[in-house]
Length: 386
Image 1 (cartoon, rainbow, N blue to C red):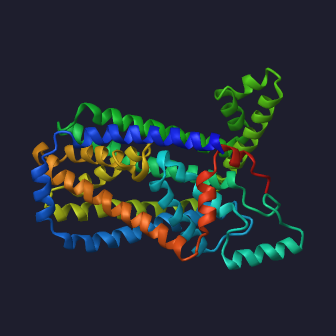
Image 2: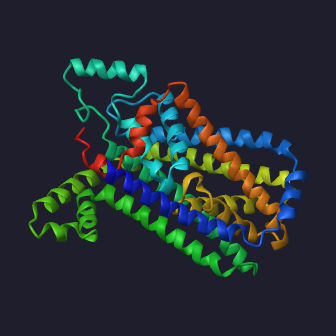
Image 3: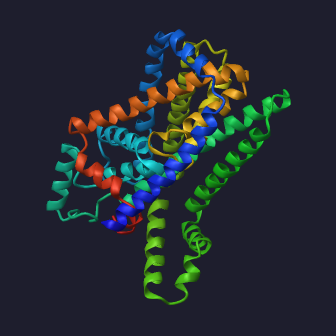
């Protein structure tokens, strides 16, 4: 218990340091009087359509997950179960440091003791037939496979965002509006998510080779070669977990599901960028639609970095960087940052509020959410074959 608390403390301190550093860069040189005037003069009626886009973003972000779960789930969870687990998971990602909340969704969706009544009844019937039972029994969705779907989600999202950003940056560069960091960021994001996409495809094509190379690159194969029993066990368990994660990539081999997932993702990102564009009107910012999507994309890149609770700092600094490509500095340091602060605040309250509401109404067990939040790599390692 003490070791677990110390790990949490270290991660929290690291995340707070990262967030504080980025917040410093985001708010240094801020025109506080202009910021206050921007909030006072804002047209908050624009929040009405913005909440509409947020509702669409919230729904599509969760609903598209079913296309990734369908090929790997022995018993498909209900749509409502997928939605509620997703909403609680998104709350955890924002509330917990260093994106530790990423494990909450796979943990909850794979837990045979925390499904909705229909799923529970189905599992009970299977248990009587001897097809399932205790945690980890046959017929259950493996947590490692569910984590594989999260990996696909992150890679597809990252690829969509990085492709758009790279294209936008190229146009700005040709117009002579580029900055020193712009193309470096575009190339880095494209290389990262492009490389991850190649790995997903190769892992689907040659899963054994993908696991073998992952173990080699992580030096686990070399360390296990020393013959020490603990290292050999760890290597074998990691191999098993990686195989499970790769099973979560199965939707990539189902063209129909993949097309539907990508289509839902495009709608999701379209609503996300549209929301950024709509709320810019509240502060009378002359931000073009492409600029709003670019700001959204840079924020997404920023919050994939280690972040503190609430994504404070990461969200603001990368939002500021996005605005600086399209608006004068005097606008960015006043109404621009007021806009970024409002977008962050509204999204924070929305995602956390929906998650809290789901837990408060008993749709998802609070105890299970706590268990999921405390889960670490050892939990995944202990996952049993489905």
